[in-house]
Length: 297
Image (cartoon, rainbow, N blue to C red; front, side):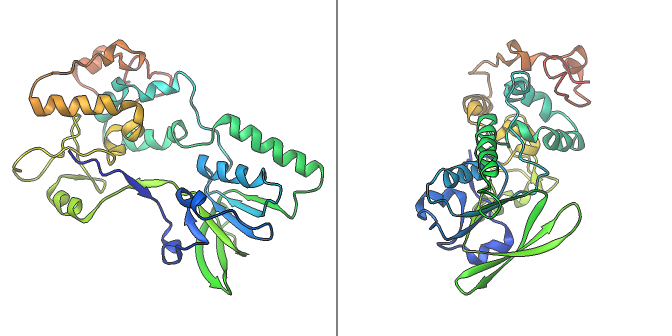
């Protein structure tokens, strides 16, 4: 079994400049606090970016902050009860059986079930910024730019000139900052040995085809099965890297290795595990949030 984890996702334009003043959010606590006279750029509108912004705003000597996100707003994560059924084993089984185009659409549609800001943190940030706006202490110290992408970074006398692009109106402008924090998430780690191993795998949209048990499908006979985790979002859904299902994923792999159900699958007992009569014969169609409890339509 190969489970090589994830690594920080660094925008290509930032990779040549990773340093003490340009770094991923994972290194935020290691780099030391920004000085009060610094201008800090936070890139990314998810939970990590929001936590870093809150940490800076709560300092008595907070720096000047520009926060950009490619999203049209700061969206809260959707962790309501029915939505959380998407992180049950039965949902993963049905998701895997869908056609590629349906799986891709579902991942995009349900992104905020795993990638957003907690509702509590959204409200805290809003209250902080509202109070400062009322006191007229916000206009020069904080800017939030939505629907904006980071395009280029250029060194400028121990500072950084950053080119930004608007995603809706295609407007371009630049700012000069002292520090850049990349709250840009993580991506599957693919070391060279894994690239070589997967060179003979069946591919789907640039990713290796995995079975329901996370076994890689190869174009040729292999000495033994290869199981791949942390790289199957398109195959098994957004839950494929969720820690709550580690035991379930491992049980599928162990059962596959043993060739028998050593660990019984009781996922059908949960709301997210119900199947329609059609699905029991041949799974087709798509999963919708409202129908997640009962069927594939």
